Amino acid sequence: MSGLSQRVRALKPSATVTINAKAQALRRQGVDLIALTAGEPDFDTPPHVKEAAWRAIQAGKTKYAPPGGIPELREALAEKFRRDNGLEVSPQQTVVTVGGKGALFNIFQAILDPGDEVIVLSPYWVSYPEMARFAGGVVREVATRPETGFIPDPEEVARALTPKTKALVVNSPNNPTGAVYPREVLEALARLAQDRGFYLISDEIYEHLIYEGEHFSPGRIAPESTITVNGAAKAYAMTGWRIGFACGPLEVIQALEAVNSQSVSSPDTIAQWATLEALTQWDASQAFIEHARTAYRARRDLLWEGLNALGLPTPKPQGAFYLLPEVSRIDPNELKAAERLLEAARVAVIPGTDFAAPHHLRLSYATSEEALREALKRIATIL
Ligand code: PLP
Image: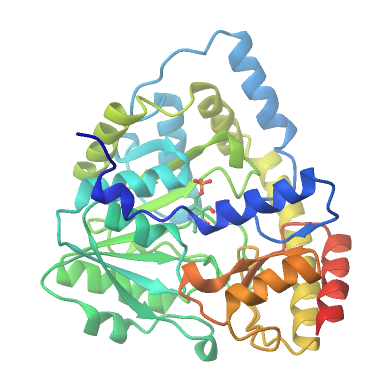
């Protein structure tokens, strides 16, 4: 008997990855395209991190690592979660994964039985519902809205809970809205998780990219119920190194290790040594982050002002590197709007469809100011 599983047939390929590939293919054909698609820093990985990888290769640190990660990195992670997030976890309560994506994938595999419900806050990052469903979960959406800065209302979340609720995913700073949730909201959601007995999956991958407001880790309030996810990709411009990490209750972290052990064995050993350097050479890393953050802030202001001036209403985000304009002026159907931008203006963007953001496009400003200015000029020509 041949054929694909129902599970995999139901899986939608990531829209972001697909459209980015299309943009890259057009570029290869010589089309002068401005891509505002990728959720990827345009900076190079900092030199101290690259050198650590080179040193690891030279020293022969090129073998399998333990499934939870090299002990040195897990110790550094426990220290990172204490230093940056105020979380008290042992190295055994941390795990290294293949990207933040790998952490999330393993988490859903580890905690969901068929029919268990996962609440996601829309607009959401495209992979949460797909990964949850792939693990047998049922996805429930609770909306956040532009009028309230895309900040969730904990009371609305409480109303969506059922006896089958197993987890709530929060992502602050948020992809695609750029919202940074206030501390009170995260505290309320953490208390809800604790009192009602579900997991709070807190995806904090953009924690260092905040322009206004402060990052808060809900694991401080509900350490027994929160699984904190993070990674090296966005803070240290290490997207291709594929290192993510998580911390949380020991039982869950051990399960993530077990999933690693039977799927990928361990994340890349060399990349783990490089990540160790990023986390421990903190002065150099902080200088890098500060430099990137200053650049992103200026780019956000430029693109945000430009889009609103073109009559595309765009809330001002406080973090990450995305904007979510409402684009009915280009076309009420966001897929058509994205197509028009690609074909008539040679600007690649992601339609909001898969983020549950109809009438919106997601623009990434992880690119040069020059490219952003040119993109705005091109968008103006079709309006
Ligand atoms: N979480 C969010 C919200 C993201 O936007 C991304 C990447 O785009 C990830 C997690 C995963 O990042 P990575 O797997 O590259 O570490």
